[in-house]
Image (cartoon, rainbow, N blue to C red; front, side):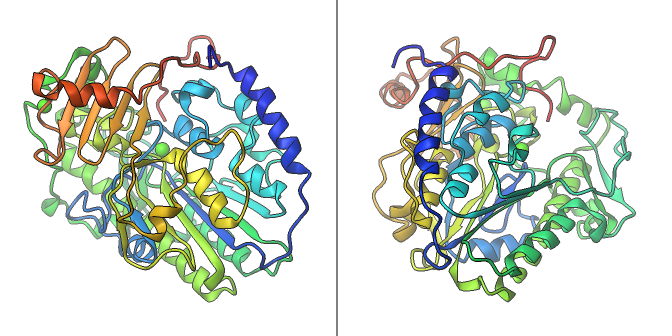
Length: 470
Ligand SMILES: [Ca+2]
Ligand SMILES: [Ca+2]
């Protein structure tokens, strides 16, 4: 299609909404319940994915062991807003124009048959709480959820600059608060309550955890689980950025967060803050899982858990997401579906989040809307070793893409600059092989996944820069 615009898609999708809305409600039992868990800013630092040797995630590991965990899963965009918009709409950033946190999503989402809206239109009781989308009003509209409860008040409000770096919410340190004072704890209580309510409709329960998003402020007991002097830094090489092209260096921005962290002697403390905040999140996952198991829905609930993107903690002198390397694009993604998945499944096929929407539909027995083009993961859920010819594609800003197959990462920036990594010999992506003629054929083959045309970014507010800071 030439020059796709959000307006064109709006018209197309409204037609789909009208079609879908005509469906009848269904009786309970005809479709499984769905517990849909979103996690903000969790990278591969879990026991199962082994991103950091000191990560303590017994409850995430327990959940991930229930079904199939995708060990090579990637977001469609390495930032909250575009990743969530893509997953929930089933539409790529280059289709919607939602590329970064600075690109407003509400307009497109309002006109799109989003996942929650699709479940609602098909007779589900669609409940949402916490953070599912990235802070825009569309998620709270009456016609997109049966009930939307939003964020819960949390301890730590008004606390800032515990690390002394004076960089807004790029901050970490213990709170003198109880776990029950935290918003994510209250969100868990709400979700458990809903799991136990009898209903004459099937349930789509979306639970969006805010941690481990910055600031890493959690009760002191979580910091105490990780003694500072034993904290290990992530694997890194001092000269890793020397072989990066200028576009990549701009994303890494070594003179920003990383320089401040080094100057303030905060690297170990930052790692500790992230580990502590993940541990707090993990406790909430454990409470939610226990709540599910004690509820009448225990054996008939599809559980889908996803984190919205990865996170750097100094690898390539970069912090946060907002980049196209493995640390920023790799996610936690696991699905347990009664009657479909077997326990302890690990799937190493390269998949991305355009597959979540159609997969959840198929597991719930709902039709996949016409606009959703991603391949369903159900064949991999049935057999994690099944053949898979797809790749994972991640987009960060118009024209910048990373393609991940089972072994390689190919990055191409809008100006044509490239990176290429071989994970078989180089899992930390230290050696950029893009200038090696021996990789030319592979690079050309992976470049075929990059779109020929891309929608312009959605309208930005005047003065707002690209990317945002969330
Ligand atoms: Ca995020
Ligand atoms: Ca390097």
